[in-house]
Image (cartoon, rainbow, N blue to C red):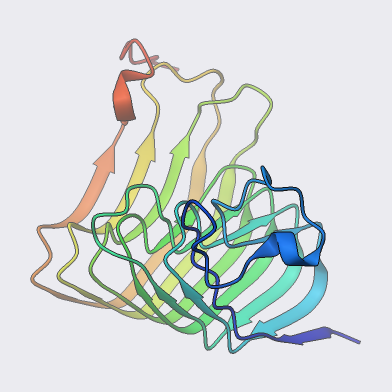
Length: 213
């Protein structure tokens, strides 16, 4: 039987005790990292629905090492000026469904990281932000390929990018991104509708030497 979670998240990751939700009240240490609003680690066979996430400093929702999880009817809101505030980030996970979701933020609406399989993104509306991304790929040597990503019936409004695949130029290892499907994507006032970037290197963290395999 699937685990069903209903949450109303009103966490604002602000400094100096100004958070809407003060985690120290519930026993957390004062220096606890709350830059990411929600992390799901090693969650299986679950449905998470009706979440509202506000003003995360970093990823709003981060799924790692999860299998057969559905996110449904999610609302994510943060200022366009918030860098790296990805709406939903998925990595090292499989059989993930992201459905009927609204995301307005300052980074990727949905990002699919390495070691992920069978990811479905349907009826998601993004904007503003950086659109829907696969990657960045190739930064770590111990990660594996991305395969089986479907993006369908999504709308991107006033985003910098539409759909994007990004990989590091000084990739630590060689692996592939395959079986990728983009279908029925509506874009309105999108600066870069389709982007394949093999020299993705934010903040000059790599030497930009492209490896040919």
